[in-house]
Structures are given as structure tokens and as C-alpha cells.
Image (cartoon, rainbow, N blue to C red; front, side):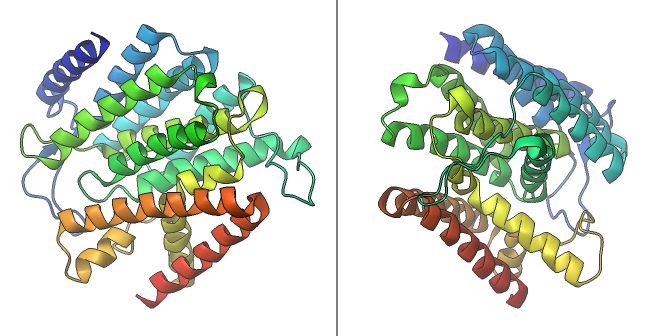
Amino acid sequence: MIFVQTFILFLIALFIFTYFSPKLKLIDEPNFRKKHEGSIPVIGGLILYTTFLFINLSVRSNYYFDVIIYASSLLIILGALDDAIEIGVIFRLINQLICCLIVIGSGLMIRDIGHYGIIPNIEIGVLSLIFTVVCVIGLTNSFNFIDGQDGLCSGLSLISIFNIILIIFFSENLNLLNEFSFLTLISFSIGIFIFFNITNINKIFLGDSGSTFLGFFISWLLVYYSQGDNSLFHPVLTLWCVALPVLDLFSVVIRRLLRQSNPFKPDRRHIHHILIDLGYSSKITVLLILNASFILNLFGFAIFYFFGPFFCLIIFFFVLFLYVLSMVKL
């Protein structure tokens, strides 16, 4: 029944926000980076937040998820404002910082990065707050950066949530996953969005509010399931759950710095832009990236289970080096 309710709520929110999108200036027009046709409502973030809030209230997951969802309201509101009038990078980062501090204030943060064989459990100590803020804001913006094709950011978000469940399942901890219904419904609502995003039936975009919200939400999911009493998997696996967004973020920022340009200034140097410039269609590009992401995640998990966390971490940085090098060459 809850799935039907979620679907109906999504459709109601779609109708309401679509109607008000011109008045709120939440309309995306084509430009030199955006090759879509016509004016598209940028309301995906508002709709997803509405459904996430409903799901959280319906299944009553836990205290930390309450805090994450409620803190995200500020992210969504100012994100929508940025979609409408472009408030600028500084305001976006300040907004993300405030949202991070609200969640950290609840007691959820990165306190250790796990044990690595001969190296004991590495606790961060006094640097926990700064390290958590840097990681969450970095990952939040990695999803925002890669949101350049229909279904790409939302598809990667769906894969990340699926990977979290998959890791926990193979760790034989699925019985401890009290939020399974919550994550399933969240995935369901993202799947509904993808349908309206990739088709021409009431087509909508995520917008910066949507991509940052998904990145922020997934960031805290990874913190929650890899830290403290809630820990269900090793912290190194969080890197592999979101491997491709992280790799693309580092690649884009490094290449922009090498060109002495603003790391936050949009351009056409993301992996999806490169593939399209090589002649692939938008749909094929998205499918290639999503498949590559899933395969990369499975590869990381296999390395962890067969060779342990230390080798898994080393391989991740080796893959990062190869990815950045190949993107620079392309």
C-alpha cells in the first residue's frame, strides 16, 4: 500500500510543481552546455524531497535519518533558489556547510576510517568534524557535477543505494538493516523520477537542488552505515559505492586547475561530455557510464573480500590515478 501512496504523492507533487514552475522561474533553457530541446521544469529535487519526507514519516526509520531529511530542507530551498536566479558558488557551499553542521550536531560524523591489516583502526580524533565536512560536501558536489545527462545522476544514486544493500547482504548483516523498507521506497521514488526524466511524458530535470540533495543524502547514508554502533561495513567500501562520481570529480577539478580555471565553473569536460564528443548518443553515454559504475563497484567489493581493506584502498587510488590520466589524455 505504501508503494501506491508514494506513487500517488509523486504524481500530485509533479502536477503541483509543474504548474508553479514558470512562476517560480524553475525552467531550464538550452545553452552551450545544455543540448536539450524546449523549456523543461527543474523540479525533480522538490518532488523527490517531498516523497522522501513522506516515506520517512510513514516508515519511521530512525533519529539520524530524521535529522538528515530535515536538514536537507534548507539544501532544497536554497538549491531551488539557485536554480531560479543562480545565487552563486559561495552561497551554495555555505548552505551545504550549514546542513552538514546540523547533521553533525546530532552526533553523526566520521570518527574513524577503519583498520587495514597491520595498521590498527585509524581514529581521526579532533579532525573528525573537518574531515566529515570535507567528505560530505565533496561527495555532494560530485553528484551535482556529474548531473549532465537525463537519468545519469539519479541512476548513479540508485546504483549507490543498491550497492549499500548489496554490501550489507554479502556481509550477512541484512538482518541488522532496520531501514530496508525505507531504502526500498527511496529507490522506488528515484525510479519514478528517472521515468519522467528520460521520457517526454511530463519531462522534468533534477536541477542543482535535486542533484545536491541526492549527493547529500547518499553521503550521510554512507557515513551512517560505516561508523560507530551503526556500522555494517568497512569505511573503505564507501569509496567504491560512489566510485565513478568521485573519480569524475577529481578528474574535472584537476583538469580545471591545470588550465588555471575556476574548479566550480561549469564546462564540458565531464566524462559524459567527453563520450558525447567522441560520437556516442546521450542514451548510450548514460548506459555506458551506469554500467561502468556498477562494474567498478563490484570490482572494488571483490578486491575487498578477496584481498582485504588495505589492498582495496591502494587499488582505489591506483584506479583514480589511471582515470584522471586517461581523462587528461582524452
